[in-house]
Amino acid sequence: MDLREDAVGDVTVLEVKGRIDSTTAPTLGEKLTGALSVPDKRLVLDLRQLEYISSAGFRVLLLAAKRAEEAGARFVLCGLSSKVRQLFDLGGFLDLFAISASREDGIAAVR
Amino acid sequence: MTTAETTITNRRGDVARVSRLVSELATAHLLSPGVVADVQVALDEVLTNIISYAYADDRIHQIRVRLTVASDVFEAEVEDDGQPFNPLTVPSPNLGASLRERSVGGLGIHFVKGLMSDVAYARIDDRNRLILKKRLTGGTEADARGSA
Image (cartoon, rainbow over the protein chains, first blue to last red):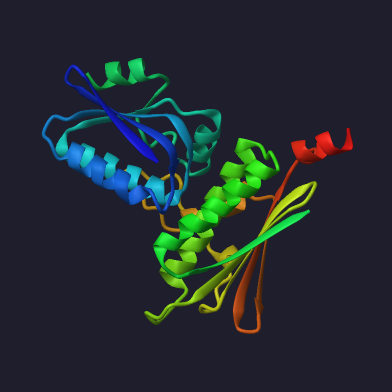
């Protein structure tokens, strides 16, 4: 898993490339926790280049979304491929997270 | 038919070795990325469950993983010497819960059942044996080329 961070004005876009599984999820978790501990944070997680995500990864996303809600931060996911969307659907996560189609839509959604 | 086998220990860092082995087999057999993703997720769930819950002691245990690619199926057999545990008896998680109430308990097994074509459990000689099967619809691309 590779993480790439871009600043688009006041919005941080974190792009994940590769896999989020039990091996890589802790690294992503630390990154998200760190990012969302800043007040009024606006964070877009771009999953366009994500190959797959296992429950270890969903646990990390779930914790991040809860933390964002508590902190009043804005946290949106975007760029789900059909395979990744299928995994979100199987886990019942499509309605639980704020999900935008594209990075641009995601940036607009957290502004 | 190709078989690859590896033995890992009950340490989280070892799961990546199985993931690499799946990737190698997938590349050699030109398996579709969708099938590979499903197998990778299912094995990640199964192995992390074993490592997290199967052992009452802190000792090192061996977990044997055997992967087989046939013309119509990708099969993964996982064997551990942990406490008897049949994952097929785990109840489905509550997928309708709100963000605040939502946990991921039971989600791993739910994924395994949802992504695999067939899951079978047996307790043999004080060992748990789980067999995951993922059907390769229409055979692998390598087979298609070989028979052309």
